[in-house]
Amino acid sequence: MKERLIEYCKSLNIEYVGIAPPGPYLDFEKVWIKQIEKGHVSDFEEKDIKRRVYTDLVLEGTKSVIVCLFPYFTGNVEEANLSKYSYSLDYHTIIKNKLEAIGKFLESNIQSFRYKSFVDNGPFSDRYLAWKAGLGFWGINNHIITDKYGSYVFIGYLLNNYPFEPDRAQDRTCVQCLQCVKKCPGQCISGDFTINPRRCKSYITQKKGCLSATDIEILTKHDLIWGCDVCQDVCPHNKNIKATEIEEFRTNLMYRLEYEELKQLSNKEFMRRYGNRSFSWRGKGILQRNYEIILSK
Image (cartoon, rainbow, N blue to C red; front, side, top):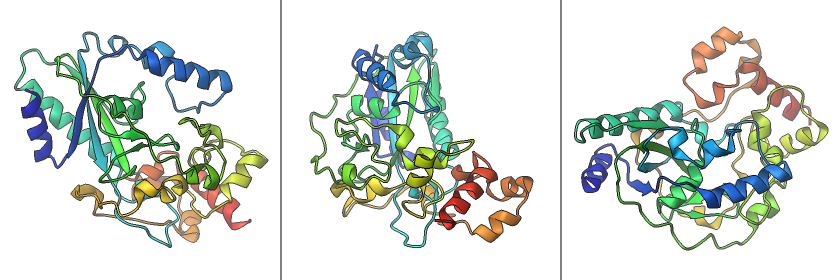
């Protein structure tokens, strides 16, 4: 059945598929508790520690986790003011459709098959699951890195009740050149394969409410109004990588928003135009705020 799963994923143009064990993820729990103690957590992660460790609390009877990678790199664009991950139409929708197709395929081939699919909205660490599934190795910048596509990959997974044989985690790391540590706008990379997300520019561009003086200083380090690619751009593992072969990430590309357009749009019109883009989820106001702070530097 695992071979049939892999073949079906190939038909969806998914090259990287692996199986993570069902947990409990006690090694992750130790790292996560340390992050909490240091205050190095954002507002976007699951707050219930146990739901990040025990799969049965999310899908009762979980026996394996299917993990897929979705490369999205299409090249470097000098005039961009949006992060590379947001060039295409919303990756959440694209990946969710593919994960649901996998789930339906397995439902039709395995009796009493049950699953739950997640892309950026699950309680578990998707990078940790990708590592456990043998799909990549850890970078100092806390990204999962692949040989073919570097770290420019999205991650999706399906908790399920079928005992697929787990894959083995790769026993290696990045070259640890520390370029990401040195060049990070917020100096958020700790050097021990963890980060402080509250100092990450990508997090700050999505942060609601008033920004602190430190936030503003970090935000104005470069001109991206949404996200940040610095720790990936300087990574030697991302040199000479392949561009994505997933058609949905190669078409309908958009690299920048113009301030005059953004300022004139109503919230409703903004969502009508850009609601199918991943940068739209926080609304027009956050982007306009970021733009005005960067323009005033």
